[in-house]
Amino acid sequence: MDRFYIITNSAKDKELKLTGEIVSYLRSHGKECMVQQAERKLEGSYHYTNPDLIPEGTQCILVLGGDGTLLQAARDVVHREIPLLGMNLGTLGFLAEVDRYSIYPSLDQLMSDDYEIEERMMLTGSVWRGDTLIGEDAALNDIVISRDGPLRVVRFKNYVNNEYLNSYNADGIIISTPTGSTGYSLSCGGPVISPNAAMTLMTPVAPHTMNTRSIIFPAEDVITVELGEGRRQDQEKGLASFDGDTVIPMVTGDRIIIRKAAVSCRILKLNHLSFVEVLRQKMRDN
Image 1 (cartoon, rainbow, N blue to C red):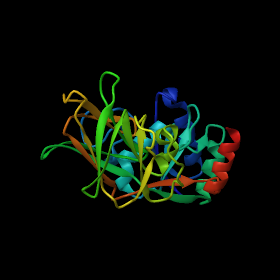
Image 2 (spheres, rainbow, N blue to C red):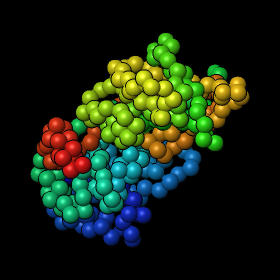
Image 3 (spheres, rainbow, N blue to C red):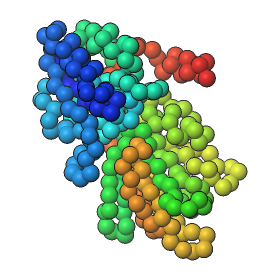
Image 4 (cartoon, helix red, strand yellow):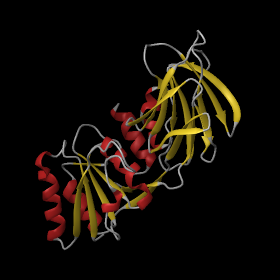
């Protein structure tokens, strides 16, 4: 690799000190490198990173921050189909493989083309109110539909390929990718899925029933979740959250249509460990 681009979280790298050191290191080895700070943008076609500023021919995007920064970057730049490598500058990270103590050996690996690329499935979700589209976004981890407001059970009606499946009385529903199966879904009792698999996982959040389990669907299935009425037949308020970041408000009768994204996120992998070995280590550590 010769042409790099850095997306950096200035909240994690004060005064961009480490970012500058990485740029200098790469350039001292004859490589090209440019930098963009990830900053919240309230309106427009992207959230934190302007993909139009990334030069053509860029071979690798280094994401400095943590898992959250990597999730944000993936949603903004996935259509550029450039591999991403997360460098974790915060606490424990699962997506950001490289910690701050192994940054320079990792850069050496990239420059010597010692890496693998994993294709990670993503989801898109569009929220409809009748025939009106009121919002849409993408997610690498998960799309969560939950109640908004006081603590109470909400009814969620679920459809697969326009065919009614079931209803959950629950606090929420998680629609997850294999990458997101080790996140919020896992904490709610969902299974662990190999991240390079292609399937969609539905997991209820605190369901008020004894026999509700996660359900796994083929990647091409289209899942629709409709926000139902409250117990008193009144209007409920809900939220559709994308990777724990973008939020689209919903009310009773609104529905979100979730499908596999047309493009996948390309994640660089340096440790050459199989998913089974990584899982074994994490289970042993816990």
